[in-house]
Length: 283
Ligand code: SF4
Image 1 (tube, rainbow, N blue to C red):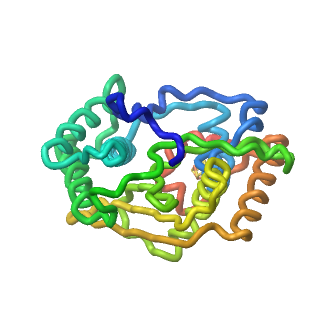
Image 2: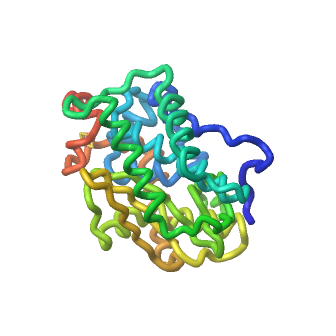
């Protein structure tokens, strides 16, 4: 089993994803480590990366992000409970959900959608979780190898920053799982492609932590529709090609950060970009 939280202690509700806690990072900091999420932002748009990580611009939390944080926090507790061999069932789930909804809400204004006020968003988030717990392929008595495990890999032999990351869940037998919430039904082939960096990085980190090869990579996507649904996309262990691609991308990241190559990349992703106004003023 890889390291996880102390099972004798009550597990804390995951801290809120608070944009207000962000600060700008120096070039040295950005080149000392790299995480899959930072690399992902870099690949989507370098200017967005600049606003988020270099300038440290903060934005109010959104309803979608809040829902994602709460779902993530409850699933973390659900996984830890199985690890303790004391499964989270029935009303226990609702109690954990209520606590997570409040804890991730504390001290920050959330920009609720006009067509979905907080009460409706909360009901939708709970329905999403209930759907997952009904339909999850993970048996109630399956003990995880690890939950929310922080892992790192020294890439200095490649002249690269240290790779850091947190694995949501490692199922028995070395199946790495990442949970996501989304508003649209994903396409399987595209999902594996767009999450390739993250999955390859998790595989690399898992191998470093355990000296073993993962047996599978699973994306569990909770789709927030009128009738919520679960889409699971799975692949085998990361291939050598994926590992090489990841290292090439990190090399590109290093070159770009060193030269401060922060340019916009207008695309369909701009529709959901929180820095749209700042971007329009960029020159
Ligand atoms: S609006 Fe588009 S191009 Fe501009 S920073 Fe955001 S993602 Fe990049």
